[in-house]
Image (cartoon, rainbow, N blue to C red; front, side, top):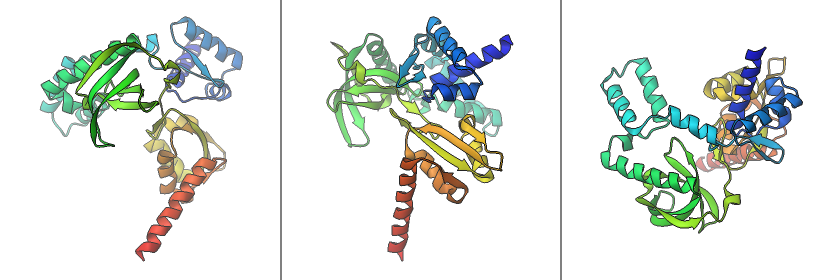
Length: 304
C-alpha cells in the first residue's frame, strides 16, 4: 500500500512538472485518486519545498522550483565531464547501438558543436553564468550582439531572463522593447551584461509549455481525436508520451484528449493519417486542418 502511494506521488510530480496543465478531474482520473487525496499530495509537495502554482483552477510545478533546480544540479554533467564523455564516444564503435543511443541522449541536452570549440565554450559558459546570476537575483540584462536568424540582424536586447531551457542552451526572457516573452539561443549571444535594475514585469513571465509533438507555447488548447488501430499505433510509437492521454473506447477505437501548444504539430499528425482520425469538438484544429487541405487543393489546381 505504501509503495502504491509513493508511486502515485511520483507520477503526480512528473505530470505537474511537465506543465501539461491538466485539470484536477483529469489528474484524479489518470492517477485513480479521489480529490481529497490529490489535494493532500499538493499540500505535501508545498511543504517539501516545491512551488505549486494554481492558475485558472489548474495546478503545475514550474521547473525553476527550488527542489527541481537542486535535483537538476545533482544529475547535470559539468562541461569537462561532457567533453570527456564526447571524446570517449567519438573513439567508440559507431555501429554499436548503445553508443548511438548515448550520443542521441546527450545531444538532446548539450550542444556538441559548442563543446568541441574551446573559445565558444568559454563564451557560452560566461553568458550562462551571467544569465544565471540575473535570474537568481531578478535583474535585467543586456544581451550584446544577438544574432537573430529571423530578422537577419545583430542587435543588443534588454531583457528580463527568467527560465533556462534545453539544458541551458536557451533562455526564456521578457524583452522590454517588444513587450513580449521570447526564447533566446545562448550560442547566438556575443556577450551578456547584468544591469543594476530589478525586474519590472515579473507578472508577464509566463511558463513555456511543450506538448508531445514538441511544439512550445505559453498557452494551451484542449483537443480530442478519435483514433482507429492504425492511427493509435502510429501515435503511441512516434510519440510515446501521448499514451497517458489515450483511453480505449472498447470498439477498436481510442480517444486521445490532451492539451497542445500549437495546431502545427498535431495538425501534421492528423493530415498524415486523415482517413484514420476523427477530430472531435476541437474547432481550432478542425479549422487548421481544413485550411491546409484547401491550400493543398489550390496548389494542385494551379499545378494542373
